Image (cartoon, rainbow, N blue to C red; front, top):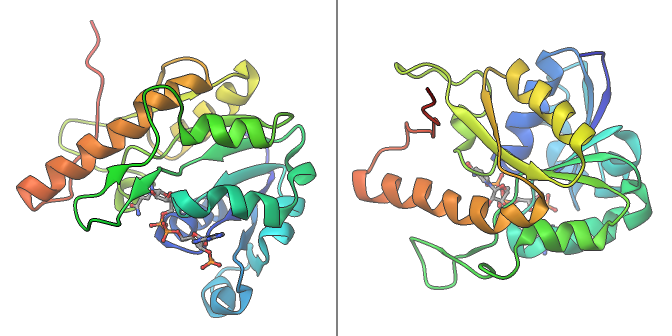
Length: 214
Ligand SMILES: NC(=O)c1ccc[n+]([C@@H]2O[C@H](COP(=O)([O-])OP(=O)(O)OC[C@H]3O[C@@H](n4cnc5c(N)ncnc54)[C@H](OP(=O)(O)O)[C@@H]3O)[C@@H](O)[C@H]2O)c1
């Protein structure tokens, strides 16, 4: 894949892991936060990573990543400016988790809608691809499992967008399983919960999904 500019919206573990992953492949990255100052020291460790606002990240990137708290995701997009997403491939790694009753969380949207669809509706000219939401951040880049590479389940309405995100997943060491249009986020977001619940019950976080095929 040719070198691109990547804008990552999100200063948490997912934002940092994916920003570092893109930089490790030679891409230029701007990682964004409402408070860019807290990212300066972390970003300064890589010549290919800069820190900025959500708007800086969204404007900079040819490919964008949403790595924001579920409940803050739509506000983060609005802060960035919805027009900045037009025509771009947007990797939506978010989950609509409700932590108000503690652990484990629940989903605050599902079955007849999803956060992925809400994101796509807010930025209708963007090519939103739901991906990276069904695995913990520790395994997002070059996952190592005895059973071989796990599969990244993804969905989105734009075939070319899904092709690009599939190439990114493969470059990060994943297989890919496409499950359809962005409305399939209704099933990928609950899939995150199966990953979380298995982790809570087993007190272990070294697992990932793989689709067995014949
Ligand atoms: N943690 C994982 O391993 C994992 C794995 C898969 C998917 N996910 C999903 O990926 C997303 C990021 O997870 P995370 O653990 O890295 O971090 P997180 O704590 O869920 O999110 C941190 C980011 O959300 C932003 N944010 C929080 N509230 C906001 C608001 N009201 N308005 C705008 N922005 C707001 C923060 O902005 P500031 O920078 O301004 O503080 C920060 O950039 C989540 O949706 C999560 O469910 C997480």
